[in-house]
Image (cartoon, rainbow, N blue to C red):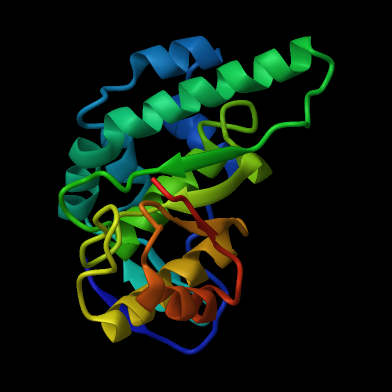
Length: 212
């Protein structure tokens, strides 16, 4: 995949729920969630392959088959699990008579390799839209914790080049504004004094930080 800077433009890759209903083609949420191949959701390849997204004030993202297949292996189970849990949370809120009083944060920050911009867009787009308006998180996704570049160890300051991190955070924040908006989230954020300023600048103050 390739990413590059571009002038602000409307995103070219839209993700309407009708596309996903055609792709999934399942009669119920339960059937859909139970039928997807966790390791290789080939529908991802067909849905995104060859698409280009020009993120306003951010990168241009191009999807190709290899990166989509890697993302399916790397994140497939987690995405499906998150969608299942979101359905459970929504149903519990409805039973309590409070169908709108909940929020969802998703973290993929424990992976060995950083979350690429292509992966961020793919994960968030799939989570927000799901197969349709029933399975997607929609505006309930309030924050997303990617695995950022550098090292975020507990109890010590950030290990890595802060300027490079800030540039990367700007691109991740641009994706979050386009797809949500939701807040980029920094996990293991305690004691990271050197990056609080860059994080605030990159996200225009719209971020969350977890101390764990």
